Image 1 (cartoon, rainbow, N blue to C red):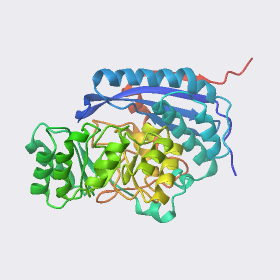
Image 2 (cartoon, one colour):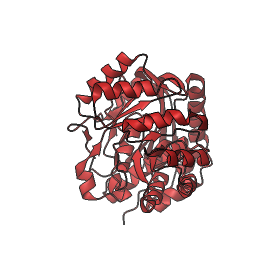
Image 3 (tube, helix red, strand yellow):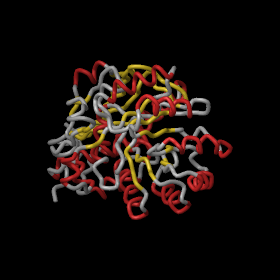
Length: 382
């Protein structure tokens, strides 16, 4: 099997791209998306990754971006120089030594998958173990709608996007903005596949809300209770027919294994940034499959390179629900990947079959949105 050439150069680029409109969840809203693009270069190839801190409100988001940059620049990037990769176990071994946040790990770890795929002449989907059939089918794109300013705004947004062929609608909800939103969508949009995402904003005392939601034929209720309330999640799942989807709870393989043992949910949302890369996400997928717990692939939402990695992840066989991967134009005023992510047909995103990630950087756009950049390289004496 082909190994990579030694890593000679790592470049970190912090960019900021505006959202088309403020991104609203139960935790707050943000208007700018921070991301740190990771380029890992050998003499023959460049691997691309993206670290995308969770937008958890303006102050927390800025702090998360600073921490992520510091961890990548101080701990991860310098230690990559001179390394070679023979297989995905080598990637796991490197990433396991990085004592940083999961988002920082994800940025570098995914770039290494791209690099290895190019050396092995295999797409990331193939490295992950996806079948040719799943790759050929493409990835279903599911529409996610943030908390709206009004019911009219919500319905207009959904109707406009359904015309493009999205396969599912997911509504963000929070206490006081929940049942009314679901009723309105059911009234105006009929039997469209519908899910809700609560972001852990409810408590065990809100059982009546979930009983009411349970009567609206939902695909899933995502993270209704706080991440660590496994007993509450298990009790709620026993009370309602709608599958509970674990998101914040699914922060790593050990946490997911514990949730499965407790019966805390029937679906797990795989988020590359939350769990620390493609390797941990695949490990969670492989835990869920034999347990009869389905998976879906979520989004933070990431920019282009981050979403591109999620496309490959969504080809795994237990990813049975539409993903949160969407065209670049859905959330942001622009993007920096080449090509831009777009629908290849009604509700379907094509899976690249070129070696590695199958996406590149648009250098002009990277410069346009650049906040700062730092390079790490092997210095040759003389």
